[in-house]
Image (tube, rainbow, N blue to C red):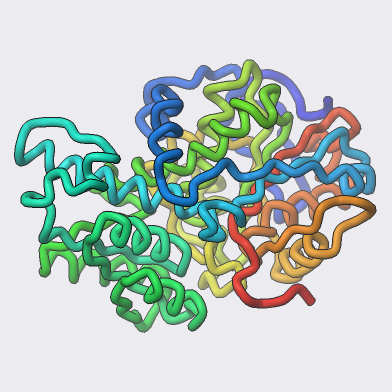
Length: 399
């Protein structure tokens, strides 16, 4: 394979402005305490059993794309289709439901000094303690739907703050799950700020998928839900796992969950490539700066689930230290990848993907068709590639 040596300095030069190696990534480094504080793989079998008791839950399929792999000379190419998650249409459902349950369970523990269970809370345990809890979050769409679904499952009120760019279909889907919607005249980060301000004033419980100083418990719970994507894949679908992971990132929750789980579980962790829109490149810029920093653009993108200008700081020990490469994609790349999933080569299965869902494939497409990137990443006949279709087709047909 062509992806280089064991140490942190396996690549030193790269002339492509949209592809950058991580100078901190040490492929000999163990999965240590700093990483486990973010994504802890222990006990995930119990968590999977808990989720199995949720209505409509089933593992999502891992689909092979052999014709597309052959087009680019790859050994294997598979995609985890999160458009099938819960009938919800996106991976976010895992995090929102579990995080809402976690906040309810913590409130019961703090009030009554006892532990409860998912089934018990679902049946009304602790209702005297949690009846007045209101859950709030900021979202560009899918996370808001997930928190709304979790709140509705447990019979609690939910308020979702949406940035100006969120389309009407996503707002309607959130309202359909019983949540109240507050529109914010600004971007995703403005919605986060307004959610924090209003929740502090009203005494609401924030269930965010991004972290800030002093606020990490809920985002870690959200990511623990996301880690079930890798857990179910390694348990039954692809035990040997991939050699390469192309994973899209907004604030970093999905990327941290996938990179962390595969780092912890496999004898040799996959080469991880983090993919972002060029207008919302907060991870690309943070990698260059060596610390969390802002995106270079205004995060205006059709890839709404990735339209973030700041990373979630709690994810830095995994992504900032464990991702191997960071890259950006153009809007047209996501359009082309989405079309390719809907109208695939040969006998490959067709997938319904949103723009954010197709971003990982867009990254692979850009890298596999550029000779310098292809060589640097080792995209050859030995490469086994994993992609995540993080969201289904949310209404816009492929063009």
